Image (cartoon, rainbow, N blue to C red; front, side, top):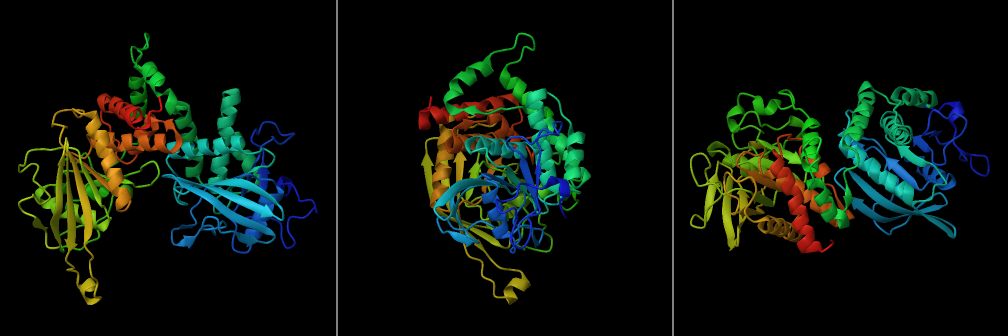
Length: 543
């Protein structure tokens, strides 16, 4: 893929791009209707650097005075290298590329992207730049619009923070599909902010005039419209944590025309803008062999976002359990939401715990033991219990706190697969802790003690810090009520801790991506705000 001759970037002071090659790149105008000049902060779209061009890439960044790099591809995707890692792996360990010394100063992980601070040194002169690396945009599909818009917001923050002398570097694996889509979204959002119009076709046409193949597929072109629609409908929903009390007062006020307060308007907007899952999306849960593993066949996980069971238990067992991954704020797939196991799925639950290294289980209900809700962990009397032919669960310790009970278990697995037996595979025991809140009676939309639920979140975090940060299983009777509140509140509180921001609206949208039934009513939505407020008042004292 070669650039068009009319779209060269600036040359270096020696009037050369490199001693051996030019760097295949373009500098694009953001405001495409003004063709006679480049803006102060244009975008530079490029393909990924390979092992032969890393030095040229960093030389270009230095000479073009680029302070922000936007990377839109994984390093490795679909069993092939999409982009070489052109930055150091370890912190404070410089690497040399040509006459430049590159040092990774800091790395922050969020659910969908990384933010890396990099120092470039040439002789006695050095600069600090930032790379924002979006990791959830596979080459064969498109990301969730809200996730990419949050990424774009972070890019804007760093563009404002760093000098505006050079262009922003934007690259994916080939410098065309994802790069073109991102640039088109960026340009149209800026155009809308200034002139209140969009021109997707016009800017797409201009991008393709600069490089053939920009906005590579029809899906990319449709995604541009989806992202712009998302931005237009939802707008900016975050605010600083020190404005929380003021914002909650505002959200409680009813609009005299619509007779709705801001909470109701936000929740209505979320419901209208939630993804719709088809039977085809959730084919695994509707297969004949799996249908009776669901409490409600209308609440089944999409195949792309369900945890697959890998422990072989018998020829009659499948890889299915009614559970779905949910993103956190700093980690993708941080939570697994599921329902209270049935008699026949208790062994599948422990397979889920073992196969996905889940050392934390949060139970948000306390139903009486019955055929409808059979117990699925050993009691203090039993100490040890078998679940199916493979798993044995052994009680290690038990504690009872006000409104919270905890059990620590050792999960033992017996190898029954002939292949594994012949290979001499040994299954190591794993430890998990179950946390159960006892002040959330059946039939109640919220618990009787907000402090207990926030304390439960803190207990879970302390346990994970001592053990590992595997996925947290969050469980309710039906897998949709309560679990969304817990996950959304955790996401929102994590954002408060990490960045001093409150965005419950986007937290709820995040947890509903793979299971739209989560946060199923207005009461649960409002309660997410209450949990954030309680945390801030009692743990941060930021108001």
